[in-house]
Image 1: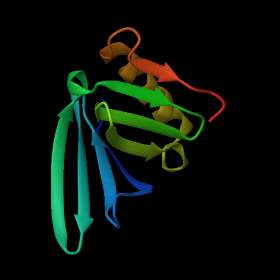
Image 2: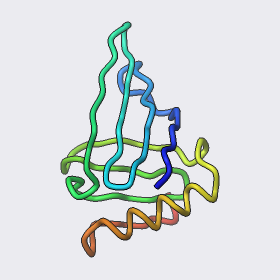
Image 3: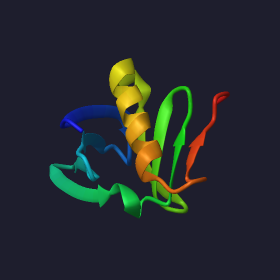
Length: 100
């Protein structure tokens, strides 16, 4: 995958998260109160990915994860991410919800 950086509208306690997607992992960088946090997560470490009409929800554990708004992703990039996520996630761990 080419490197993409998206500033998401989702705020985690007033921290904006920038996503960078790579071939085998993604990186979430957040800034809150002048402190920068950075986390790289391999796709195979995700417990599940849920795609809705408006979001990609990337769960790094069963009760939480990252939300990427499709409003900040081009339709072509969303398609590329979808293909990658389907490719790397085990069967049943990539879930599509069309009415949410």
